[in-house]
Amino acid sequence: MTISLVRIDDRIIHGQITTRWTKHKPVYGILAVADDVAQDTLRKKVLKAAAGNYKLGIYMVDQAPEKIAKAMESDKAYFLITNSPQVIARLLEKGVDIGKVLNVGCMNARPGATVLGRSVAIDQKDYEAFDYIESKNVKIEFQLLPDDDPKSWQSMKKKYDSIK
Image (cartoon, rainbow, N blue to C red; front, top):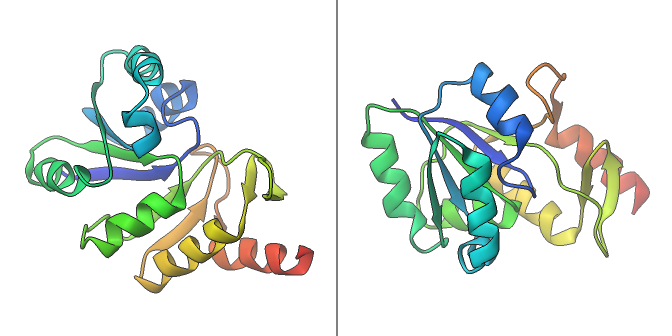
């Protein structure tokens, strides 16, 4: 199969992933890519518990290209999830093919971030990463749940620009 969902979600794995997205997209396992998570023993345990019966790999960005390539060659479907658009940009810089659509879920408010809507807050580094991702011909869809109408990066970018 392939990577059936590429998603940014600051929670990585949670109920919406395991109960809603898995019914919308085929999945055998989840590739979680985030340096901060891969180095945090407690968070890894929490994510393994949240993944339930799904196979889970948690990787540093430098490990990810090899793991993603293996998943792409597999006959099974995988979700690729990270907690930041900068990680996706770094993967693209390393030549990783993430497909043509990036789904953006929850990016909660944090210091220095501008709230753009329900569960979406971005800062200047996120903005620059999304611009870079889109320049690589990846369609960016802000969509918390599968049955929500997706919003484009261009519409979110306009909102950010109007606030800043």
